[in-house]
Image 1 (spheres, rainbow, N blue to C red):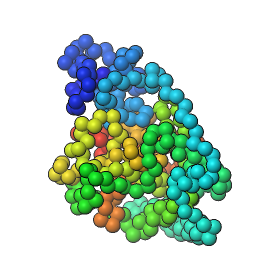
Image 2: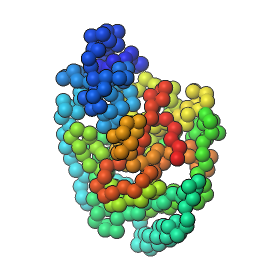
Image 3: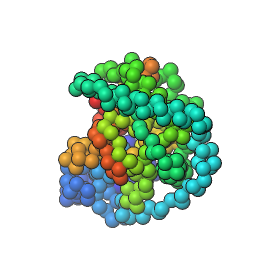
Image 4: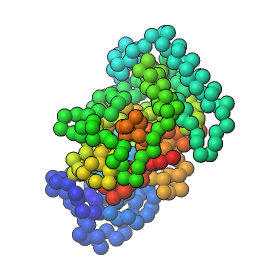
Length: 340
């Protein structure tokens, strides 16, 4: 139940926006504020209020039908994916050899040494490749945690943007259409991104552990120290037109292209296909608590003529720290553009 008008054809939802006076005392259980009543969601069991942007993970739109708060939903611990190397390798379609893995490890060390030896200017700071855990058994644990989350959520693993029949065409993904322009990923940073992709294809994964929280659901934690400006992952999923998704409440979507012509705007939908980015929580960084927790920046780039979304560390991240990227809603209620 929400304190605003419903945009979708939900099955007989109960709304109180027409009777706001009856709920003048409603406030958010998380932040304690009654402001932004249009963003307050009421639990259909306990009638407590929660801002969409205060929930973890953040809800970008009003869910269809009934909604229950974290305390009333009583999320159950998902069944763990088997800790069997062959099953994990097959799940993520990893192709690896000792020689190629050693070469990638040498490449990442050279790149990090080159970056650390340079004097970084305030105007231009180079992106860093992630630094995988040296222990192969630990990497298997990390991959198993992601396989568990993907399996439990019914999501097929994908590390690329996907273009499905009946959705947006690949040719629609044009950075030139971006309202106000889109920053171009430099050649050197593009090489770093490609290095990260090659490492993952060979089983050298970012040091991340997907954990299950009964209240927040799946969350992602750093499994080792991560340096500022490290590429964490790319936000991927099915690419669709925003106009096709405006009535799909409850989906977690990321803006890919904010076009001057709204009909050309694109979003990434990770509910069917996605990677670890699907489980990293967005956070309202307009609050002091949000600013304190935020440790990733969500940045959209023009990469070889294609819009891409990267999650990048915006400060040093300690082992065990949960990951949160900046979330800023705009008029369509989806994550907006983020620039460094």
